[in-house]
Each structure stands twice: as C-alpha cells, then as structure tokens.
Amino acid sequence: MKQFSAIFSFEYRGIVKSKTFIVVTVLLAVLVAIALSLPTIIGWFSSDDEPVDPDTEITAHILLADGSEDGSLGEALPAYAAALSAALPGYEFDTTDLSGDELTDAIDGETADGAVIFSSMLDARYVVRSSNMYDSVSGVLSEVMRQTYLSFAMAEHGFTPEEAAEVLSAVPTVETVETEKSFMSAYACTYVMIMFLYMAVLLYGNMVLTSVATEKSSRAMELLITTVNPSSLMFGKVLGVGLAALTQLIILIAVGLGAYGINRSSYDAIPIIDEILSGITPEVIIYLIVFFILGFFLYAFMFGALGSTISRLEESNTASTPIVFLILIAFFISMTAMTSGNTDSLLVVISSFIPFFSPMVMYVRICMGFVPLWQIVVSVALMVGANVFIGWLAARIYRIGVLLYGKAPKLGEVFRMLRRSKQ
Image 1 (cartoon, one colour):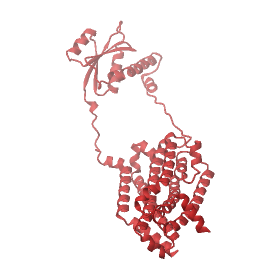
Image 2 (tube, one colour):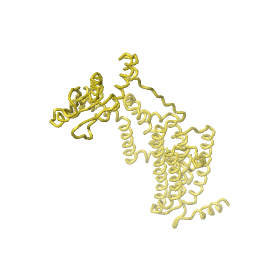
Image 3 (cartoon, one colour):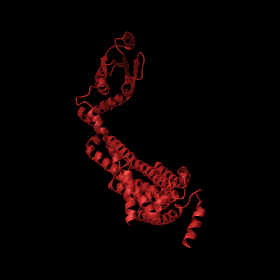
C-alpha cells in the first residue's frame, strides 16, 4: 500500500505541477469564463445613452392620392398616412389632390420620391422612379391597407375608434410546453461535455500508455520492478493520471458555474443563451463526473496494459489503435444519437449497456432523453464490473509485459503467457 501511495502521489503531483497542465487548464478556464461572460463584456462597451435610430431621419417623401372613380377615399387617406408613418419612421407621407399625370410629373421632377394611388381601400398602385433594396413601402403597404380597411369596416358596424384599435392591436399569446427536454439546451451542453469526455479519455489515456512505454524504452522499468510491485506501479500510475484529469474537469466546472452565477443577470436580454445554459443541471454534472471516472479508468487500464507490451515509444500509436477505435465508435454513436435526436433507437440503447461505449452513449441518453433509473443503475453496475475485470486483467498483463523486450507480442501470445503464468 505504501508503494501504491508513493507512485500515485508522484504521478499526480508530476502532472498537476507540470507547465503543460497548468497552461492548458488556465487557458481553458479563461476561455470558459470569457464565453460565459460575453453578454456582460458586451454591456461594458455599450453606451448608456439612448441609441440614435438612423431610420428617424426622413429619407423619402411619399404622396398619397385618391384614385377612385367617385373620389370617396378622401377620409381614408389621413388614416393611411398615419399608419404608414408609424410603420415607416424614415418616410414622410402626405395626402395630395394631384391626379395621376400630375403625380408622375412631381416624381419625375423630384418634388416627391414616390406616390401611392388608391383605387379602393384594398387596391393601390405604388409609383416610384426606381425601386431599390432599401425601399420598404411596398413591403408594409398591403398590411397597412388591410388594417385600415378593417378599422373602417368596424366603424361602419358601430365600433368606436378606441374599440377598433383595441381589436386590431390584440396580440395572441402562445405558450410552448415541452413534454420532453428542450432539444436546444440539451444538445448544446451535451455536445460540449461529450467533446470534453472524448478528448480527456483519449489524451490522458494515451498519457498512461506513453508513460509506461517511456519507462520501459529507457530501461527505467528494470530498476522500478526490482523495488516496486508491478501491480502497485500500474494502479498508482493509472489512478494518479485519472485524478489529474478529474482535477482539471472539476476546475473547469467550477469556473463555468462561477462565471454563470456572476453573469446570470446579463442573460435576460439573450433568452437563447439562458435556455442553452439551463440544460446544465446538478444532475447532468454529477452524471458527467461518474461516467468520466468509470470510462477513463476502463480505458486507462487497457492503455497501461498495452503500454507494457511495447519496447519502443514509436510503437505506441500502433499499439493504441484498437483502444482508439473503440473510443471512436462510442463517440460516433453518441454524436449520431445527438444530431438525430433519437436517443431510444435499438443501437443506442444496446450500446448504452456495453461498458466500452456506455460512458458516452448512456450519458447522451440521460442528457437528451428520459432513461429509466434501472437502466442507469444496470449500466453503471456493468461499467464497475468491467473496471474490476479489466483492471485485474491489465495488472496481470502488465506484470508480464514489463519484462518483455523486442517485438511486441500479439494478443493471442499475451493470453498464452497469462495461462502459463497461472499454471
């Protein structure tokens, strides 16, 4: 136990005190803090004065004319002018008695920029020298005509102007009630956490393999195993690296929660960000830590066992290929379930119970769907059992592998050695 504690402490302190770990952790923490503080930072550079609306400057003068056969729209023209002025602050609308040809001459002579000639309350022509992409009259004219027509129609049926305005200004309220979790909030937070889980398992797992391979290739392993039990050496190394990875994860979570709490009031103006961040609940964080621990150690034991079977550091990439392949399969299944939103497909459900895939797949199911508690318990239990078995098997392989030099043995040869050592 003393040997294990010494190795565990040495590996953990060596990683967390290294410049690489400190720089990467600080950099990631700063990025997380800045990302969650963006609304507040933007507010610092925003002026407290009332912003000047560039549309309030009059950019065009439009004439409104009665073009009906009986000239009965005279009373409606002021209403049109008021409604259009309210909808388009950058335009000036005036009523006129000019006829069609006179309006054309006024436009050609640049006395006016355009004219709207009403044939009836629901029929009009918009005359302009040259329409451009910034001309907004034609876009709102039909809606203004519809609203004005309804207002006059209600007035004819006994509605007062106030009652007509109340009816026309009524805004319906629609409330969206989600019976399942919000896809946007669940997807965003799950994506970030799955990416972290994937990168951490891959990077820190390879760190275990590289560390073992380096000690073996430098012949330092021969000195270590004369004084230290191989099992204590492997478990101390794996658990030390794992705790360092968990420390980094907890630091980033703490920084994220702190930044979110400090800037919470700034998110009120950006509902979509608040909705996304609302998906990060204590339950999600607890499950992230649980599945990270179980998934990391499962793969780290395998990385440590394979690292003991190679004699040169150059062989590490080839040796780690089967493990990386398993991690990639779990990652692709998780991403497919996330992008499709179908977390209850047969492939996803089955994969969530396979210990090599469940750290990511079951986590996606929990974050983006509703998983019965018994399924979570079974998945965690299978992962715990797999960790115990893989850890025991990895320790036996490690004990034999550290003494092997030369060409790395194939998997079948390793198992034959294990059987002979047991006999």
